[in-house]
Length: 322
Length: 173
Image 1: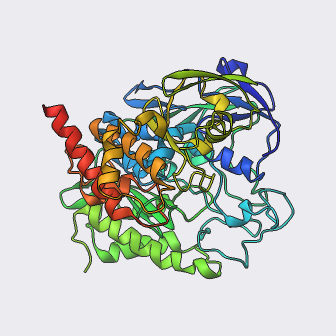
Image 2: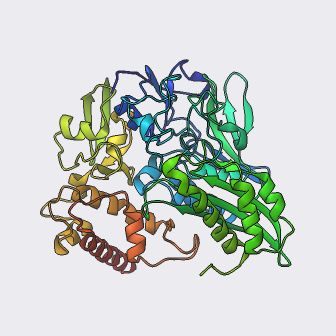
Image 3: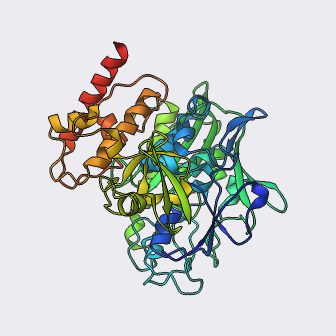
């Protein structure tokens, strides 16, 4: 690990400029040990008063330092935003969830193996160096929204549920602002090293959830192990039913893009319709129309189609497919 | 830099490089080698300790960030003459082969049983709200952050189940 100067922040207004923020450290320290990240200064924010969950209008304000385990177990989250509890519980391990924070989880980096391997070119580590994943081992790579410069995925689960829940990120800095989670993470384009809209000198202070929407909520995650593995694909689903028809649909997808993916066209298609396999196939067709595999990860296209079908059958009350 | 660690009920003053992980501080600065270094990347769980009663990976924690926290290691859970319930059950059920992962398994299981007592659901729980049984699936899911290369898993699960039952009986008594 490279040397760094260590600071402990006394307040949000007191962050030393140029220092990298550390909270749970579960991803950052891992990357620092590998020298994939080598900040010259770290600022520890864990003593700041950002670890509360409190009402925000009809919704909820989740402090940036709320630990993943506390968020998953919070009674209001379990009762009114179960897709978020489920997504958190599907991620990492008990030990990591006890350290990982809400803000840090949004900032976690990709698990593309070439990003981790400093001997291989990577446009995220070294802009302009090239992408080793294209033409390489691509099992965990993107099928949607990728570019010729980067096919890495955003690896997290929590943010996929937050995307389906229309969450908003509260940011403090020179000009405090609130950014919809939909706009917080960026697609790679020709600047894959720029992963979020967070600017130097800014800090995530909270995530805001709007009023609960009810409905059937699921987080379905498909992975290589039964536990403690990143998603190959995942679906966060919130489905409302009224008189045998779908009255509300919010669907977000993980493991398939550089950000939690959502396509309002499929939600529009589903709303007002009676559930059927034909309808779900049409939704998958729209979702996957722009999908592009890169060799090994071609399997994610049919896998996402089937995972979407299974999730929609489950949330609309249809029986599981034989 | 100068730091103070509260460890197993005692305060220790240390002079550490900021890069020092809690794991290295325990093993190299304090000579507490019960906590093991496996992968050093938060994947294997051998380094698990308790911080304010919660299980964490000490390899992914900077020592300078956990001043004022109460750290408990395997040495603080029990002694050869006064084993913790989980330590006793790992012995009784032969919950290991080489033993390298065992301190992490026991610290993790200690934290896990507290999480269960607090009513935290898991990925394996059918409901987020209803009470759950401590089934094999529940224990396996909750302990997935601790690997055992000898694959003593079946005996580890049996040891944890027995310790959980005994703890419940004590609570009821």
